[in-house]
Image (cartoon, rainbow, N blue to C red; front, side, top):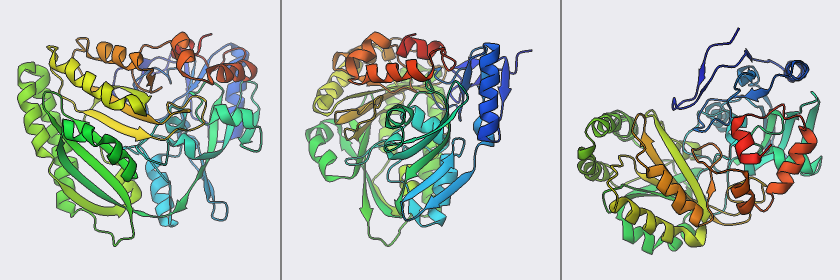
Amino acid sequence: MPQATWRNWAGNQSARPSRTATPRSVEELSALIGHAAEQGRTVKAVGSGHSFTSIASAGEGLLIHPDGLSALRGIDREAGTVTVESGFPLWKLNRTLEAAGLSLTNMGDIEVQTAAGATSTGTHGTGRDSGSLAAQVKAVEIVLADGSVRQCSAEQDPELFQGARLGLGALGVVSALTFAVEPLFLLTAHEQPMDFEEVLGSFDELAAVNEHFEFYWFPHTDRCSVKRNNRSQGPAAPLPRFKAWLDDEFLSNTVWEGACRVGRRFPGSIPTLAQLASRAWSERTYTDVAYKVYTSPRTVRFIEMEYAVPRAAATTVLRELKALVERSDWRISFPVEVRVAPADDLWLSTANGRDSVYIAVHLYRGTREQGYFTEVEKLMTAHQGRPHWGKLHTRDAAYLASVYPHFGDFTALRDKVDPGRLFANDYLRRVLGD
């Protein structure tokens, strides 16, 4: 009998798997995979459901929840690593490391994902020198289609390691990850409003002189909110509790939710709301433990598309995007988010082999798309853009093979470890081929 319907966080993806399971050990996980293979049933693992694509959809197969695989396996201070099981949530990892006087080097802007879900989809923050979560992985434990439990790293089974660090769930089910960590550090955050052309005119400098630079542009305005996070010797000077609640909970979530609802019902009000919203975020500076600066609560639900474009093309693409919005009749209530990343060597990383700029567009849940994502995607692909694996896009294997130098290496590895496509679903058939 089919299980209850699974839905992702945004509510735009769902599935009715024939069976769900919550293994509590790698041995139990291996047995579940072996049994599914015998029955001819596909297998997918799902984390917190924060992908907007159907990458984790099990269709009518076996859906594995990682909640039971959520142990801390150990901290190795000498090696500078922490090993956690795949379902270990990032919020818990951050607090565990803080208690041990340690930290990840970089993070995305939310911490609700599971460790394996975040790395497998290429979750990233912004950084001049530091890359995605997957780029910080030093070893992977993964259960393959034949039920074998494999350990891999740069030294042990390096080919599998290259694919499994950011594997889209296509190679097997990750059961544990080892991350590089460093001593706990502080970041000083400086946030300020700036004019769109002022940001783009100094884009290269802002990206070069700040360890972590990003900005939000508010469509229908010329205004941006710029964020610069840099390491600090301290002392810590966090936002006062009331100020943090007012800015990050009340304005960024409660008030923003209300404004988005008004804009969805009355689209003509959106330009006025955008002008008001762009002035609501004032200049502020504070210093806190790194993860408290990297991440913030996000309760307003939306759908998102994000592309990585070559760093050299970023300002051109952003100006073209602004012109595209201005000559359209779209009404866009969500700001456009822009982040940077250094080149890395992960086969399916959106920053593989090139310094990159991430450009993300959003729509409030329930808002009609009206061609916004479609036209933005045309712009991004005209500049060799690479879509975030967990965010909405329409690219297929033929296109992706043209923008990823190691695409063939990954699909060849997939042929080797999962020739029967035990871990396939409709999304993976589209983006990887069958």
